[in-house]
Image 1 (tube, rainbow, N blue to C red):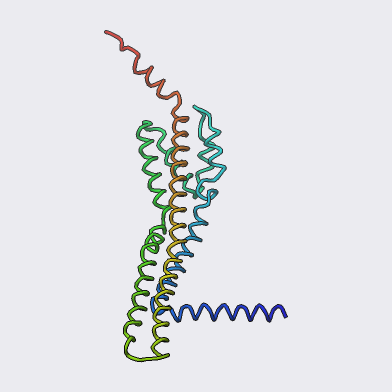
Image 2 (cartoon, rainbow, N blue to C red):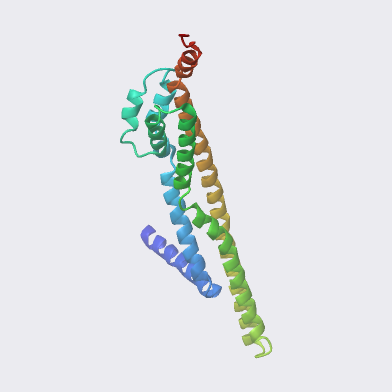
Length: 233
């Protein structure tokens, strides 16, 4: 009994959805494609931008544990095969420890910007959908109104009223569908963009702290060496 009721309710919902699309006109299908792409990208970005994927807690804890002047050998082993963004930035910092601190910082900042671009992959498509979904809905609305006015005066009575109602339904359905796609897509785009920005700043801050700890004492020794007077012959 319950299964039969569920099947009947499902069939009713499917009929409503199909009727909604049928009345919406031709532009409902590109809007449907936009909605599928938007949902897919938001799911994929949601999985890819999890904090434990971008900034593993083991690496973060090891960087924070590293004392000034301590050897980063253990950290180097942890990040060697790790595919995360934080690990890649850390590897770059560790690989340039033999050079001057200013050069290392510059290299790390360049890598951090590169990782930010990698994390933002796919967000440009969400931004495009935010822009085109309302426009497609607007085009659908105009198309519906064109149908309304094209049938005005061509017939009379119930037939004329029916054509006007269908045209208005097409206009309203396309507009509603376009806005219903644009609003959640805009929310997702803003959320993921902000999340990428925050994590990029946190990663850069952590690695710069690592560089400061690794270079601790080196600048002092170099300064003392530079102050040693040369012997006068």
